[in-house]
Amino acid sequence: MIRAIPRWGWALLALAVFVTLAAQAPLLLRRMEAFRVQRVEVLGTRYLAPHDALAASGIADTSSVFDDPAPWREALMRHPLVASATIERKLPGTLIVTIVEVEPVALVRTPELRAVDGAGRMLPIDPAGAVLDVPIVDAPVRVAEDGVVESDTVAALIDVAARLGRVAPALAARVSEVGAGEGGTVRLLLREPTNAEVLLPAALDGERLEQLRLTIQDLERRQEMRGVRRIDVRFRDQVVVSLNPSASG
View 1 (tube, one colour):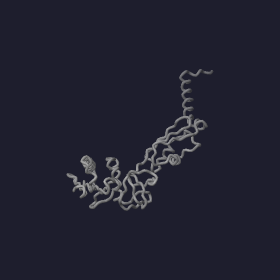
View 2 (tube, one colour):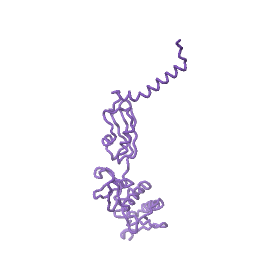
View 3 (tube, one colour):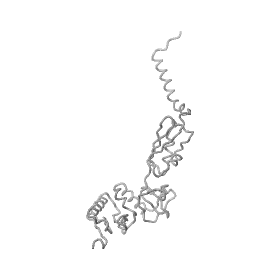
View 4 (spheres, helix red, strand yellow):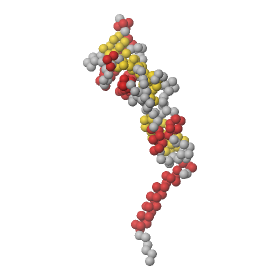
């Protein structure tokens, strides 16, 4: 005797069919020519050329917008200029790749000028072909096989440049060189006025940077900044400003 399938049985059968189709949908869609990648938009890059980002991702003209984007993102994250990457699809045939780049914080001489990030890693940026508003580290540099500077002194100076850029970007824009001073201090050479220097303690903190910022602000307000020869911020309770003789006389 054939028994009728109860209503709940039909519901379970329909659910099973739906789950099976849903699981197979990405595979079926990837095989459809209409969803082949026709266009890739690369956003957020300044130093990394869009065509280099595309090559690094592994996205090809045979790819589908419904392919798993995880391998593309992982490939991009292996590039030294990529800090993060997201990939979105725009139907029917466009992928949008948004990249956050690793920022250069300084230039080092190897002996040619090379851009580095805050951790002292060499970055594939041609200083001659890019506008880099970062200071030069005035110290001998040795680079390990993994592309990271070996010298602790240079690494400390790079860290100073990185902190300047994060905490006081307007001040960092005034600095042309970062070097080691006497007794483990840090010496900054300013772009304006020419050859003016700033002396900072090795244990640089936000308080000293704020003292320096306020001092420069006050000197500019009094129109004395152009005559500055040295600003010494090594002492916790005072800032010593030295003027050129022609300016003070």
